[in-house]
Length: 150
Image 1: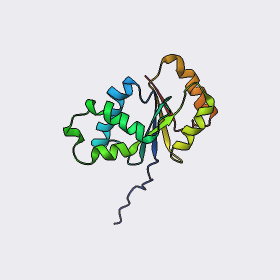
Image 2: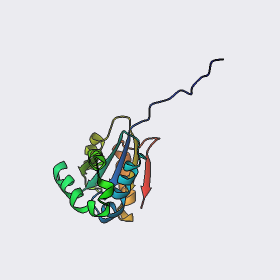
Image 3: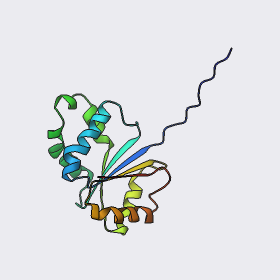
Image 4: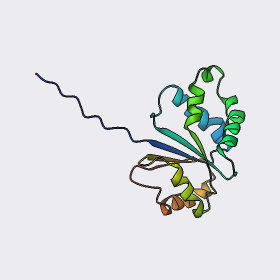
């Protein structure tokens, strides 16, 4: 008797986008928690984390910021081995003013083709509506997109 195995569909890549990605909430809670999820293999392999901020930083400047500000919130033991570096490889920084619709195409270019998208709004509540309108206007929302409000 032949047994069949369920068909396996490849997992879509995941883009996790943090508005307020260099703010206090992101530094103290979100990025350390995402690192722990990474460390315990609770993030899909093709997950990319995009921190958004208004500072005109390149990736090197953002990585220095993460090393300086985030590592105090992750125990040294948890950062042993190559897991921390593999987590850093998932990170991306996008300079974006959430109130400016013209900035959103740069976010679209940074994301993976065909990805599921989670937008985490770690911003003032007064920005929620404008961010959602700008995401929609830039064509960055689809049936698989999710928005998390902090």
